[in-house]
Image (tube, rainbow, N blue to C red):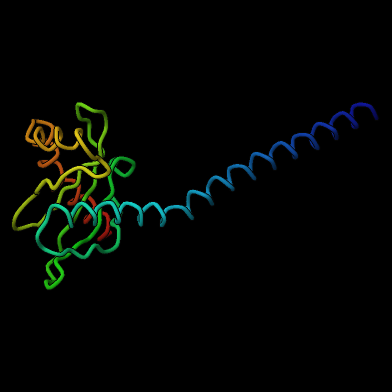
Length: 161
């Protein structure tokens, strides 16, 4: 009877150590993800701002990120945005889309009055960028231009709830 008790006690000690280790690892992973989110948003804002300065004549002020109430949350990031001297709310969305050169981060501006407008690709330089800029009018770009208002609509609905 005593042997059975000792083996049970050893089992629960090993189980507790294992469970504690797993809990610690998942907790560390969660905290690292939670605290790195702001750095990720700041990096995306810098990329978008540099592309807008290069491609647009107007000055834009990028605001806070908007939670995407859809499965695109891991594929895209949405920010509120406005012109420097205007209070009208616009959105800028960066979406990872498939191109001839692999998945590239495409930037779109959305305004309720003017619709969706493709700006360009972030983090792409040289010959690849020139080739992508020439080929951005394909059907995939049309698809994403049509999808952006739906994505933003779902994000606004989720924000109101």
